[in-house]
Length: 419
Image 1 (cartoon, rainbow, N blue to C red):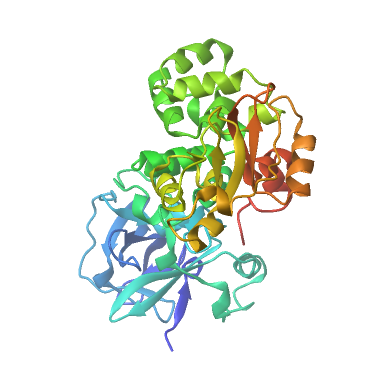
Image 2 (spheres, rainbow, N blue to C red; image 1 turned 135 degrees about the vertical axis):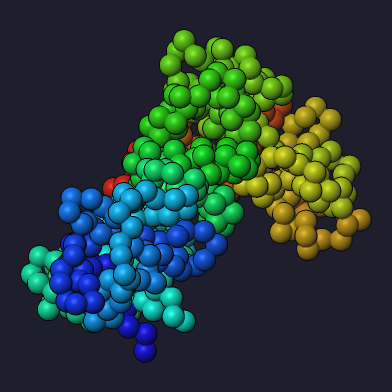
């Protein structure tokens, strides 16, 4: 069984030469972060006569016994300077936030675990639990053997490195892209501003993902990360967001920025946002998405499915295809499941619900929620006040988000660092 050693057992411990004389004190261990799942330890920073010096790991013995020995002939007296890609395990990781990419949560690195793997000392895990803290407070004899379940494999962890001088590393976009945008948004909300900026910068490699993450952020964090952007950059981001989310955010930014940002939005996004801004945010009109899937009364099932494939409406709004008459009024809603089960040559209206519930843009959210609940709907059409045309849809996910109290993730422990 591989022996796991704690970083804390080495920090500030003495280091001896081959004659057994003490020559200094360990300040930190240096690891190289890159392609390796478990970063190899490349050396030790040792305090000798008031100077921090670097000793390569190949010249250090006694790791397993906990009594470090310098096995070289002489120490390089040049002051330690970290090289690109190097991190200090204690200074850069211990007691800091790390990203658990498996669970999509932040963890606190209360202990760093190292082990000898194939003749190389590697960083194998992080212990986010309380036991390392108790061990440091009450003595090393407490809990010398760590239960394996408390250690998070370092291969599933990503450190923040924006605070690390000369690291020249950033969080890999591809790793974050495995998470749902809501999970990434939770990470940003758990993190410090500096850490959040690093996450936002990483997802910025994919403009669509960046917009999806911004949609999931609470208003406070949206404004925080939008503040430093130019009006043009803010408009670029808002132009990729769903129109209803973009309208909500524009209504929250400083008044003197609203019009300049709005005017730089691309068409037809700008028109949709202007329309939504004309409604109170606590009404169906303020909550609705103007993008939905609709076909004519003569359309067949195959055409309705093609309309879904070609639609840019939010996925939640595509749960039903609305069948419109010549005047643009909905006469039915065909659930996507019913369309998939039907023959392509059937009329879409033949598999649609024709007793169609609807709301109007001035209706308040409680009235909207009652209508959606009474008819067991996940997407609800919004008709203009004259019943002349369908102008949008309210989806159940947007309604829930609006009805839940602000900051509910934090209140229920969903946006806090884990132990």
